[in-house]
Amino acid sequence: MLARALCGRRGKPRPACPGCSSQDPRTREPPIAPSCSECWTERGFTRIGSDAILVSRHHANTEAHPAGIAIDIVGAIRHVAAMPRLRASESRMRYRAAPHVLSAILLLLAAVATAAAAPATTARAPYGWRASDAAPAETLAARIGPPPGFTRAPAADGSFAAWLRGLPLRSAGAPVLLHTGKPKWRQDVHAAVVDIDVGPRDLQQCADAIMRLRAEWLYSLGRDGEIAFNDTDGKRRRFSSAPRKDHAGLRKYMDLVFAYAGTYSLERELKPVAAEGLAIGDVFIKGGFPGHAVLVVDMVENRATGERRFLLLQSYMPAQDMHILKNPNASDGSPWYATPVGDQLVTPEWSFPRTALRRWP
Image 1 (tube, rainbow, N blue to C red):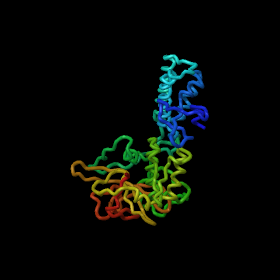
Image 2: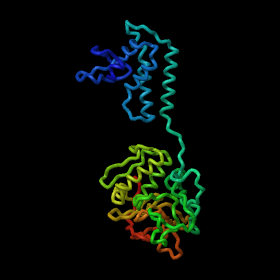
Image 3: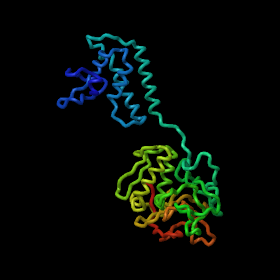
Image 4: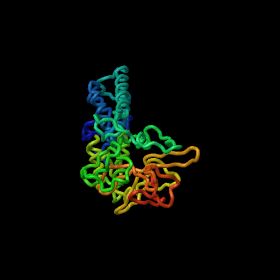
């Protein structure tokens, strides 16, 4: 039906069109290409706009995204460019296109293709869960300074590391709350609480919090196509398949991920890395039922000695506020963990072997 609407009358052979190599879907062997010359002569030059659109649809075999639109329109340009050659060989030609009119049409189609292919420039808030009228919050980097003699490791603008350092925190001394709103039974393990929602259900636990932060960072940059996580069965769950693409849609998608993914799946999704190469954004994880995971959210270095230290973030069971962990081995309650990591990384509520370090692929 589409081929007939585009380029021909029922039952009549359709010669190949020099503008494309498409085939008539109604035929099997041998394939016959639709004739754009018939479309041109039967409809006439006065219908060139609609014909170009139909020809463009004839070419389209892509998803509804800007790049696909551009490819679509480029196909139309090729067809329109082929029209004069076809019409010159048609004895039944009734219209002749003026060269300057055809040039104007080609320029118009090219401009539309360029505009359609341009990426979206709508800016998103870096921490999209916060209300637009929320009061400015102290950031992780501002609250927790490097130890004496240390400076923060470099982090590129827009990187996951830079974004994690900018995480907004709740006021100093804020308690860690459970998803029910009640205080966590232990209030001696955290140095700061991240100002981010938990949700009313017992979903955003340890690995969930790490996936949530990764997704929020990608979303803030408009990299929606990269937001995807494996569930326990290995199925890839993509944000691009979600019905809504606003932040509320992202939050709903993450709840679905939390329900079907966890430490077991995330450990297999991430790639192992040697503890000596520790970097911001890495994850110490033990997959299992239960398992646990903590995220490296900042690093500092002593340029004189080469020593490096790092901060860890976690949520836990049941679902609770994300918080920066204290170092239980620091007598002064410092949150900075030392390197090199020994055989075991000991945190207030879990211990990880040094081989448990993973990185996003």
